[in-house]
Length: 70
Image 1 (cartoon, rainbow, N blue to C red):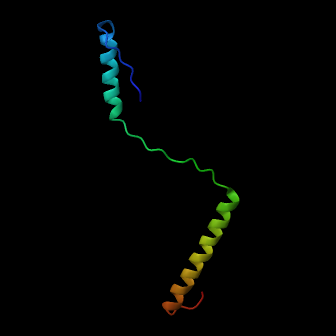
Image 2 (cartoon, rainbow, N blue to C red):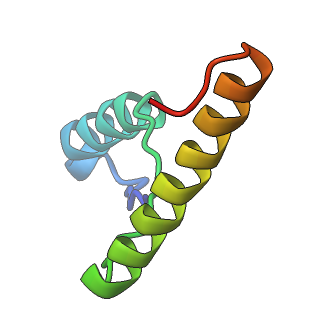
Image 3 (cartoon, rainbow, N blue to C red):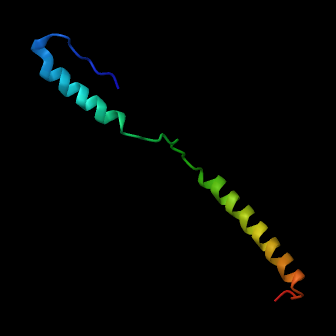
């Protein structure tokens, strides 16, 4: 933020108001985030891969627990 102030007494009220506003704005915090547009085809592929990996993990767990395929 840029605050313009005037050293003349004619503009003292406006200058003080601007300085108070600038002080309040110094306390404001914000975080920038990137807007991501997701491609539905890529999401489907990602989820298919995740399902495949989870099925493999479950099969490994069943094997280690001495359970056969049900």
